[in-house]
Length: 305
Image 1 (cartoon, rainbow, N blue to C red):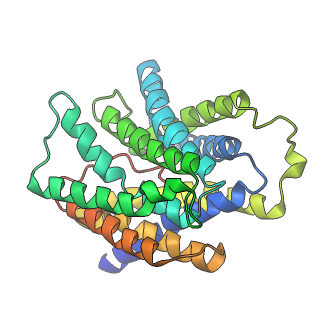
Image 2 (image 1 turned 60 degrees about the vertical axis):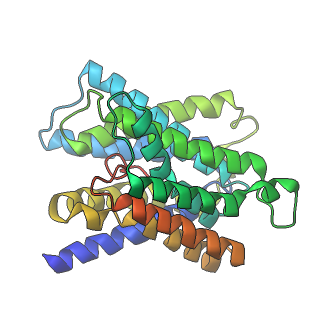
Image 3 (image 1 turned 30 degrees about the vertical axis):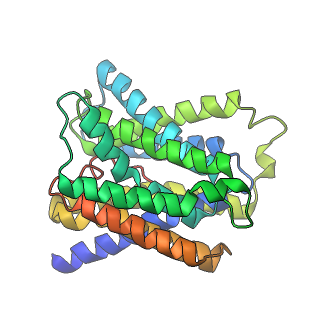
């Protein structure tokens, strides 16, 4: 069993860490929100069809409403903004910023009526984490220096972390299906509808045609559907049932490392001392927060990346 756990864990590290580069490749010729709509619509249908065939109950009307809200926050707001930002932001940097989601989870949980207030360990993690963010995307980055990150892309990533955290917090009290697989499939399906609407409203499809999709982008999309969504999520669910949550939680700070490495070797993304320093600080903050005993970030992380 121990060897199976480590195989599943390493699979989760590589798969979810690689989705950031997969998104970067897919959106080369597929509009960002449209790519997400296609990815999650197909993934959601596959998961729900599988669960229905296995005899699982499908969501009720109330549960469809809840999955729409959660799917919109997690996928349209979270994943969609990540894809949009990766048009101008390196995939490794995007993964690093998204790794700060546990910071926002702690803050929003504390603000929620009846929520858990952060202790000294969480406050320490928050302080260290925001120091890392400041180093990565501080005021100097908005001054237009040679290494500056695009302000709009950076803002989109920060908004994505807040929206992802908001969806996670909302899901704690929402009326959702008992089956985690059914919940995720429904959230993917509902989120894909929202992403398609955003794609239409933002004019992504103006002058664009499916014939514009390159073989490389198509391969990236297929990878995200099959490996990123289905294999990655399957590994995650299996680990939740068979491994200590503290071990499963390590994906939150291993994934950005994998993303940075893959972006460097396969995406021609440059690294520098500032990025190395910010990476170490942010990941340290996530480790501190995830070691509080009741990790907040794992519960609704199924569709991350």
